[in-house]
Length: 396
Image 1 (cartoon, rainbow, N blue to C red):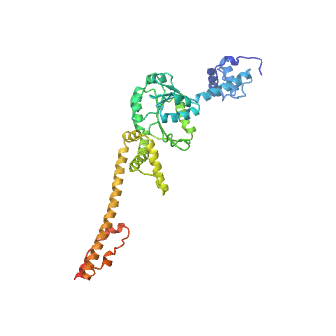
Image 2 (tube, rainbow, N blue to C red):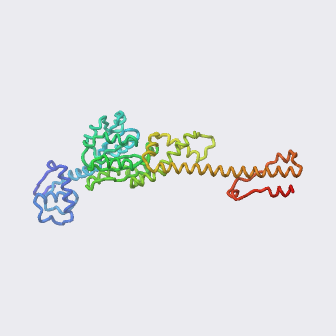
Image 3 (spheres, one colour):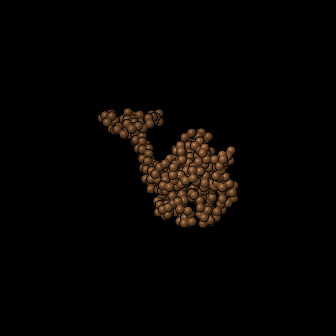
């Protein structure tokens, strides 16, 4: 329906006009009347913006209702587009593919680069694969996601042509250690690039049934104050939030402290038990099955990952020393109990033999075959001293 005057039609309205109109609406929606200093052109655009957003205060201007409907649809489309990212995955191995599947599933455009040729699997997932990092960076992704191993991260970062990226591009890592990439990024990346350090504390095996409740740790190391940049970071984090992850914001330093006492210890014990050679038995307990699962899970990860957890987390050596101390302490405790038990038994048997000589029963085979049954050792044994007083009295 049209009023007596028409000032614009749908064919002349661009996406930029719609964004501008919404901006004007957000500025002037609190006015029941248009500002006095508004130009005729501004009056028309503000009125159109009000009509698009459902405001009733535009009756003095004729509105092409077809334009309004088209503009509302365009506005919604623009809003949805702003929620989708162009993400470049550098390192398209198992973990990179694992994350890319979820990103594609949520509607993001995913590019990938790797030294190995993963073009076939990339096509199956819906990812555009590049064999040259220069070509990848010239696509101007909004986010560059490093999915490399801990040991190769510095080499890959140095070889990446970051000068071909747009300024303010967001650089993200997913390493299992966090202070190392934080220091590396701050040292080598240009200051106009944003930095987000993350650690999805799960992988293709533990996350194969979904990411619900799985922890995702992140630290916004360096993010510009511009709303576009903060929005981009939050949109990237929303990928994991929408997948059901438990979002944990934590400094890189705190992460490494906690990870050394949990993740490194887990991998260490799994590796040790693997060397022991645990095997399935017909009488497995639940606890033993948990140990078998631990060995299986840690064995699936490369030794390179385990070595990286140790080498690039300064807290790992402290945890290793604690493990050594705990193992030695338990061994000494067992040895101490065994020594107390053996000493007790030896002294009692010696006393019995001496008593037999005095009583003339040393030749009694039945007596010699008897063995004193001792109770399990307790801490009280440490305070018990044994003497030959009674034996001496009998011998006097």
